[in-house]
Amino acid sequence: MAIIECVPNVSEGRRADVVKSITDAVAHVDGVRLLDWSSDPAHNRSVLTLAGDAAPLKAAVLTLFDQASRQIDLRSHTGEHPRLGAVDVVPFIPIEGVTMADCVTLAKDVASEVASRFQIPIFLYEEAASRASRRNLEDIRRGEFEGLAAKIRAPEWAPDFGPARPHPTAGASVIGARMPLIAYNINLATDRLDVAKKIAAAVRHSSGGFRYVKAMGIALEDRGIVQVSMNLTNHEKTPIHRVFDAVSREAQRYGVSILESEIIGLTPEAALVAAAQHYLQLERFSPSQILERRLRNAD
Amino acid sequence: MAIIECVPNVSEGRRADVVKSITDAVAHVDGVRLLDWSSDPAHNRSVLTLAGDAAPLKAAVLTLFDQASRQIDLRSHTGEHPRLGAVDVVPFIPIEGVTMADCVTLAKDVASEVASRFQIPIFLYEEAASRASRRNLEDIRRGEFEGLAAKIRAPEWAPDFGPARPHPTAGASVIGARMPLIAYNINLATDRLDVAKKIAAAVRHSSGGFRYVKAMGIALEDRGIVQVSMNLTNHEKTPIHRVFDAVSREAQRYGVSILESEIIGLTPEAALVAAAQHYLQLERFSPSQILERRLRNAD
Image (cartoon, rainbow over all chains, first blue to last red; front, side, top):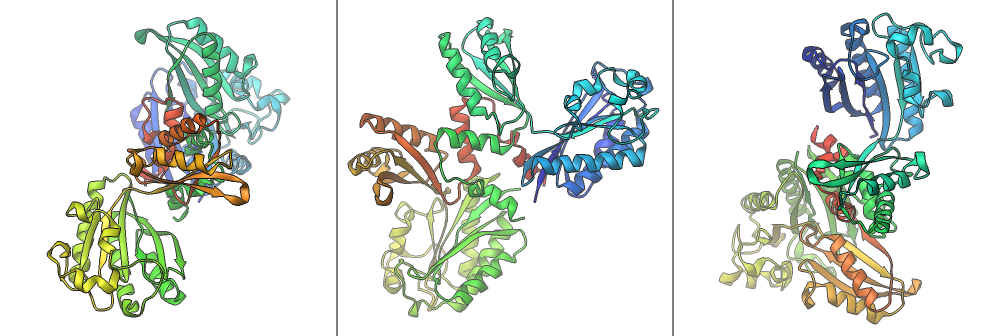
């Protein structure tokens, strides 16, 4: 059985009854698990975490679009978080027994169905993007719902599916495929913010570090320590343990020790298993040797 | 949902049809997964690996006793492996969402039911043992089926459940609860067998090492290297990473490096996650942050 994660972001974080009708609807789709959901009133936005195989997830996302487009009107929507549509963004994420190519195929299939059923323009992003200029979500979303009618008329912003005009109330949606993101922080046994900032600069992609690391140095004022706060955007190609070891070496150079690290939210099992394999120098190990995984695959 | 592993050892490893009738019967019990099974003709013995919650596992083990006691006659059984009964030993092993105490309760429940339904004497062992002298399987099994009629008459070998005489064809059975066993080997970048033997002696319980490590040093002749070959009998109390680090330090003392390590067969996910937590200095981490585990618990 394949496990795909799907994290739809919906532009409603204030009306609890609307959010509940959406989460209830997707949770009742056979073969789909609603693992988590949270609403942010300031952002006026909710984030759902679903998991399942391709066909049930497709059904769940179509249900989600149906509920959201009938109940959310972007013309009267306000909130701090940028957004383009009632269903703002829908990434599909390969977890187990499924490739990125499978998730790209699923994203395009769902995008096509949503566009034709609801007449909502769809932009494909990240691994599913049709051109390099659409890989980055922020580039697609720039101008937001309010600027969409003008933006979408330009040939370079013609949608990948659906009409070249915004849906009157539901705007447009961004659908795609990406790797799971791991929110990973390393706390240093020092209050020297300059050290955290230098280490963040050393390991992040934008300033010469690892390809799949975003990082910044911040102070944890209440604890009197500093943190290298990171997002790991592809744990297969830039694994946690390589980042940990690099931060550790950089810290040593300033006479600073690592106090601890932390993972915020969910992580795929594979990211932790890879770290164990690395440090234990495990060879000839197959994930099928993990009893729980054998159990899943016996289902 | 709780996950309990159960590894019944059955005294039949030659008649494939008999083994198949047993594996088929247990595999068809609702809620039970047959994860693995193997037969050894020289030992004339088969080992099954089942997983499930308590109630389905109990049903599967009763089915197994029914099949085995009708088809196996210990009076004509020969094989290299010591054995006391048609179903020789049945350990229950806590994997997830279940305590050792739960497995002890299950072992006693199954033992009582087997004894009264099949009139087979049962000895409880390991964590379920009724006295210290019965913790060790080898002590209970000493004398084997052939010596059982005499042994069981002694008050100190009265069975924990069932009649104080062997079942005429099925003998007696040993049922209990234990931690999962991890077969873990560390290969050294040297051909010096004396070094592997010294390190094995340093880390194993019997000669002053860790409480839950059995170890020996052996030569891998074809590869020209040596191995510290181990069984870890309680990975929670003596974790893999502590053993790895200790072997690494001992090896350094002889100027030897670790080439690699390997896990043979199955391991619980928790053993690898604990190693990742250790080396990454992960704090405030809960196994519920593992996406696949969240998924299992949403079932």
